[in-house]
Length: 193
Image (cartoon, rainbow, N blue to C red; front, side, top):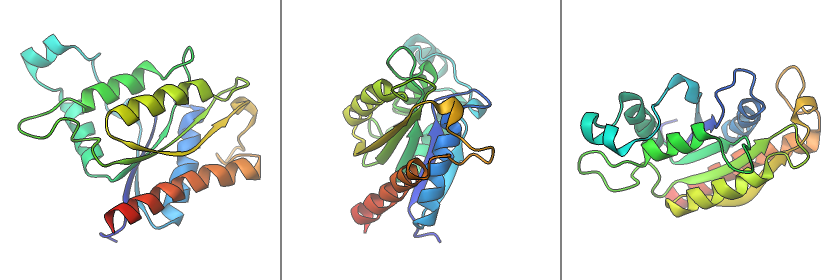
């Protein structure tokens, strides 16, 4: 399956029982069903210092930031589930994007993001489901050369939305999230075909 589209799926949360980790797994399953080779990444496994240009100048790009960049560069699409913190994205997600955007050696600026396709989603106990944070995530990704699909989904009442097996109780929501994964695969396939 070496010709299968490669999709990197992750959530902007380090919390063990994160709703957004559950959500992105649903989208990842939709991408797999559409024929993609999907890698799930828990950002908790790649701890990073806060981005600091002085630190970068003195010590270079941290090893985990390089691992993140290489993962991003080796995949053609992203599935990102983003919690909403104070109407924006999480510091964890912003910091990961900031470190991954740093050029290393003679690679092009934004090498981890150029020509990538992203599907975005969120889940929150609140009434908007994290929708306000998706506005910021869409803007940020678009500004760093990622093609963000117009389809997105925000699951409100997330604390009551999931079954014990990680699926969504609402079958229409489940299908909508799976379709985001499948659509990323379809667009990546068309762009790279």
